[in-house]
Length: 154
Image (cartoon, rainbow, N blue to C red; front, side, top):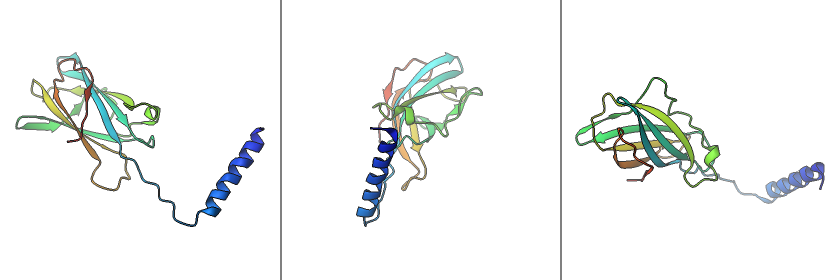
């Protein structure tokens, strides 16, 4: 089939679908997720934090991350050379169960030592609902190699 014939067939198929469909077509936005998290220490005050992020439509997402340890908590602070946590692309992870990989640099100077919990909120606005979906990673020591740990909904 020639490229012109293929385009005509596609146009005819689309026209048939549009003409034959008399109801409203509603597309639903899939919920984005963080699937795995891993840490690798860089030096005494910085750790590489690797995230696997997935979005069903391959849209860019924003991720907000907080840490918790006992009664202490705070937002993670990115090291000066780190890429941001906004507008993370996900299209390369569309066919992968774990999603697309992203790596940032985490400034640990105000983070207590020991294993902590990360609370990750991922959002691909416009999203109808709360401010995105929340995932948790427990027993993560940012000053040690963690290996990939699952990010789970609470």
